[in-house]
Length: 316
Image 1 (tube, helix red, strand yellow):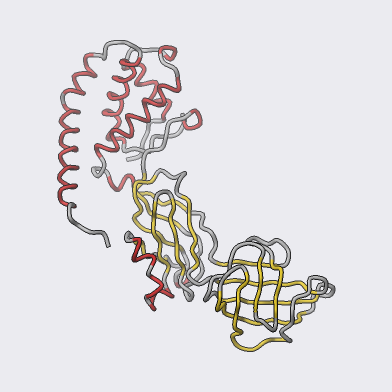
Image 2 (tube, rainbow, N blue to C red):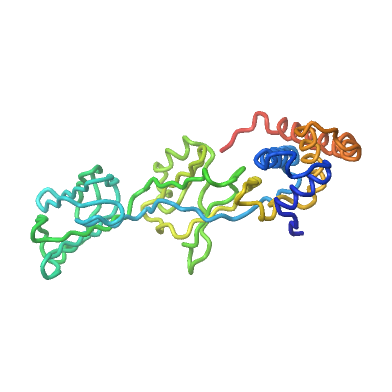
């Protein structure tokens, strides 16, 4: 069942239940009370409406593929290419050892190709040392900023990329995926919970074909294997948290289950009355001390039981 209450309507209902007017409490205080009570219910009842809170979000992830040139394009600026030393230098960022390079050197005046070849980075850093893979089309030549223009496409080996989750209301991650599977199908990433295993994944020869990720705080870090397909549109199936009541969201529908509306209304109305220095209406007080108290106690007991069940278990 879809939610039918907006934040503004919820606020109005609770003011009426508390027998208050809009001028009895500052709007910002009412917003804080609504947010506080919503999170109280979410914390206590967490687990009773799991499917409701499951939602898909799209993540903005740093690209595992870089396009570099001798003018500013995305990731940075190329400043040197040595044919004799087999090195390429960039002004910002680093080349990752094992990354594959597609190097194109052309004449600045006509655009005619001087050299094109593939290479693999053997020594990483701001100046990457590479070995040529296959043959060179044209002739490998030192880059001259006056006469040449230079382009390098980088496919990073185990590129460390990340997504910022700090603006998302997320309790935990369920699944991370993109649409880079066969024929655009879903490709599910390996979601690690063990930081050490994540850091040592490169030791696994099969990891070169995989995309793996690890969450720490508000950051979701990715490693993309050298032979894995580049990231496409990355999405996450998450267990969400309640969004906040603000001036900008007052006309938004609540994102909590509608079955919790009655309990939420009583909680908010009671706190409105307390903050306004008024008595809590008898009917509201009766429900809080009666059926809602029983619900809270049962939910708290379930949480304790779940915690006891997990004691001693190790995440892998």
